[in-house]
Image 1 (cartoon, helix red, strand yellow):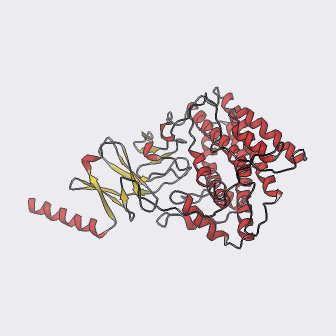
Image 2 (image 1 turned 45 degrees about the vertical axis):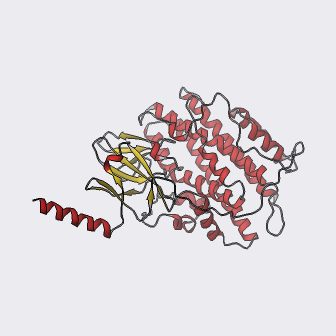
Length: 427
């Protein structure tokens, strides 16, 4: 019998060596529920060790907004199936299939325990430590830091970025939008925006992984989700004003400045985001809470920091990746509130969705405009910038109808999906 067991172990080892199985360490080392492994291709993996002594693995980056799943909780969905919960926006992902009740799909990996060691089936090289990567700069041009004159668009943009109170930020945004559209503000001007917008001292800002949630399907969880969306919209207001102020001195390769229509579009985007924040805040109050009652994170501003040197990268990552991802999750998010009979929240989400389509369209319009003026291949440039500035791959399912309405057809995003992923659509 001992000889038979040895032969079996040897045979299994041969299978491991012949495939894409990687030994990640002794089973005894993985006592924590979640362990993050860094991948050479940027698609990092979280190894999950459950209380019943089973191991699971999936991509560590939430397919919604890139939240750190290795910092999430493991919960029983009520049917005996376990899920890993994103700490940012509370999306659940089945340990077994990677599917989420929101309609999103995360990549999962087979895990085996053999002879006291844990193996993960992946073609990527894994490490417990970050794998160094060399970043290159796409553009050399940096925004010029010049003190702005009074009553220019950039002066007001910078003032709004420095405004900590969200209600005041919304009010100022509406006033500036009205004055710009009516011609009371005529000059774009130049300004030096802050490295990060101000926030109220009373707002509890924590690391993304420190935000916890209650059980799903409750009023508290709906308030938590609306609160997270309001936080996103507040950052979206700032992202709109930041792209105006930070890139006001941008010049095309032929020396031409950006046309006024560029600033028209992003003033409108800022106004829309202010409207969205106000609608969400009012809805949260109607449900018996208020914005600031729960902790928030500032993880979304990282995209602004990473692309502060490159307008094309900013348009690609913020508007053509993150905002497009918002279109992808909309149908499932709407369904979640509709199922619970929350018609008030559904109406708010419908308004936000219609506007967000135009925001993706604006990003795409100006991205292709700059590429065309500079003789660049738009698709190739977009794919290069996403690979450079976005962690990992784009993940299905995609809202193909919403994306198509915004002008983003499949050739823009399908090539950025992980080859082993099956393409799914939400509509």
